[in-house]
Image (cartoon, rainbow, N blue to C red; front, side):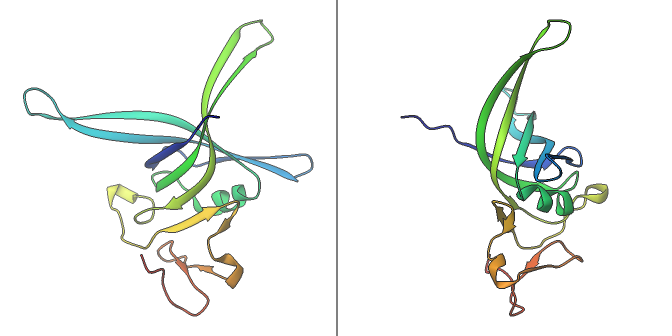
Length: 156
């Protein structure tokens, strides 16, 4: 038995690339994702280290990503690490490390236009539908938050 679990909190590096396969019955969303850690060096100067990840989601969740995820947006992502290798037409071996996304949550505000971040509640997405969507949850286009059917906001 083993555990392969990845948790990332960071920002979308480019608008997601969405591809449809098998007559639009299967979808894949792929995007670059940056996680940045801050620390102090021996001299006490603040430093930062940014790691770039390739995140891939499959299935109906891709429609939510296509409509609502944009470059600069802060997300919380859960998934699994995947390693791939292949040989191209010139017989060159290639390797890729990707995060196979399972779920994600919107964090903070809308994408940062000019580096300004808004303050709206988080909304979670799993398996292609926003949490609680069975009750008819609606997206508030003004700030990117989700509103419950009775008009209440999320309690967090």
